[in-house]
Amino acid sequence: MKKIMSKVKGISQHQDVLNTVSEGDKLVLEKEPDNEFDKNAIKIMTETKQTLGYISRNLANELKNQLENITCHALTKTGQDYDVHGLNIQLNIKEENDE
Image 1 (spheres, rainbow, N blue to C red):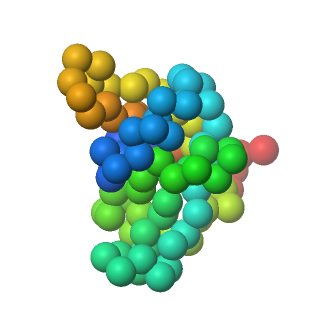
Image 2 (image 1 turned 90 degrees about the vertical axis):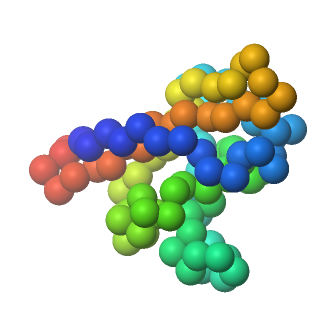
């Protein structure tokens, strides 16, 4: 299994949702082909489908055809001393030789 650590992009617009997320929470990934800024956008949501933000453009382009093999979890919140907080995530990508 390949593991990628990343930051949630655009999370400053979803601080209220971020406040409901805890370390280790499973997150949901969903393609957003109608996104006006990036046709390969991948949205990150809570399990109750509340939007947190997006995977970075470059990473989304790399992962766009593998979503069914990817799980995502919240790692750590960042910026606790500031008004706007961030979120680090871990993407686990199941590879062909994984059981």
